[in-house]
Image (cartoon, rainbow, N blue to C red; front, side):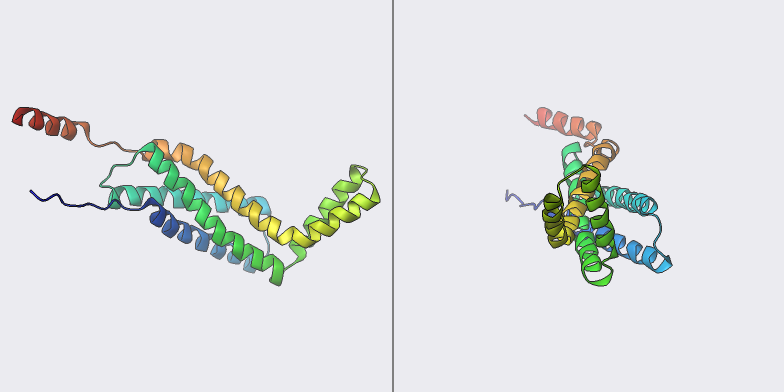
Length: 187
């Protein structure tokens, strides 16, 4: 009897695809907020997180049901659920980087003003404030990019810890017991 080689579906490829959908969705939502007039950041973040949760649930469920025959372990679900926002946040982070670097630098100015005021409030010497502000101005867009990726990936991991509890599904134990009974009977 010739054994048939089966290729398991790649979690990495699936997470890239669902992450791309998440990233594009977040960019579109950002554009909508921008066109409507900048809303409050708390409202935007809430919408982003709701969309991220939806993308994680959609991605895990679709992968489990369409690629794994309805079975997924907690570990694989958590892995997929963490990678989806990682790839989504990379796309969203780069789009946001381009926006604050080339379209609207007022975001950076606001952050830098807050940073400088915080340093003044903490009684830093003027030379340290100048040095800190020099590097903050130089690296602010990149730092925002990195923190965006870390923030959404970490949030996705936390969401996935809980989502995976409900999304995991083991192979039906009755079918597994019947198959093992048949194997025992045939031996």
